[in-house]
Length: 175
Image (cartoon, rainbow, N blue to C red):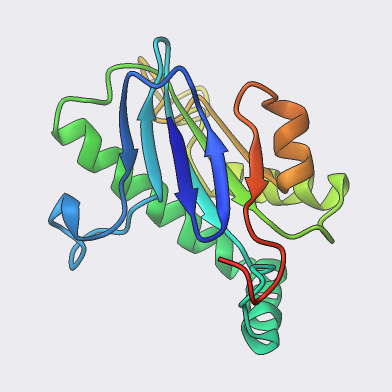
């Protein structure tokens, strides 16, 4: 299956079901936020959110506003709610029956590995990866998210060579 967001394409050949998730099709856009894609693989679900501040047609002001939102931590809040609402939606539909990996692709070449690791850590802090902690707390039987990570295109392709991402247009005049 090829997933498309803007001028980014991602090939995920082993998808059992799913695809584009955000938008009017899920019927609750006025109540719930949604990740861009929910796809089912044989052993897990992938919840994928794509942000593309370097889209060839993106205005400089929009790119700068996105970068400020990213570095301020406000983006982490948005990502948290997109995940939680999507998970709740899928759980209520009876489809959250496998581990879930939350993958955030930020197509911003300027993000280096240290910044991506910091963004991943910040997102992990927003999501309860391990459930309640402490001696007086009962642990969850299963986590609501098994893994989360923030990637740029280069790090995505390094980490997921079986699911490559590519740009299909390189200038404002192209597609």
